[in-house]
Image (tube, rainbow, N blue to C red; front, side, top):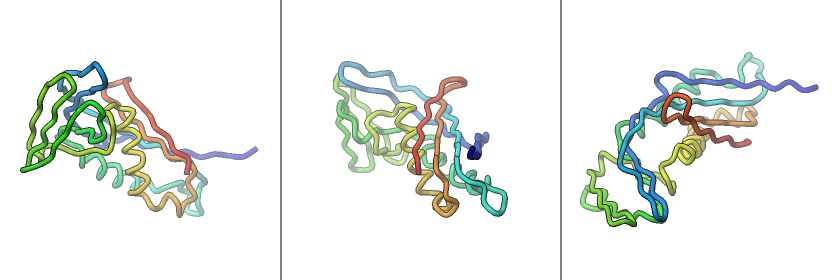
Length: 162
């Protein structure tokens, strides 16, 4: 029998408030916002110091990743139904239904995703946290999972094996 360890961290500081809308062929939500909450689960062996990963490392990385999205409009740069032009300090979006949005670029975060769904945000943040935590390799971590909640009891999770 083999033992497995997991650490789970979901702090009040792992949050971001952002505006977005989902668009796909034939559909566009109204622009709206969420008070997103992020959680992190890490699986791996316990090291000689008694840790899987130091909670302080996880908290610093998660806070950094969340702060990049806070108080921004989430712009899915790979959308297949929104034409996005970034120029002159503005982000201009034209949706498939003809709706136009224009925001100051400083108020936006340009994301390498197709949709600004909780699922795609969880995947994006998981990969960003992996990159922000080089200690994961040093600690022989085998799994990283990130949850993104749009509201209480409404959460998407994404997990990668390392």
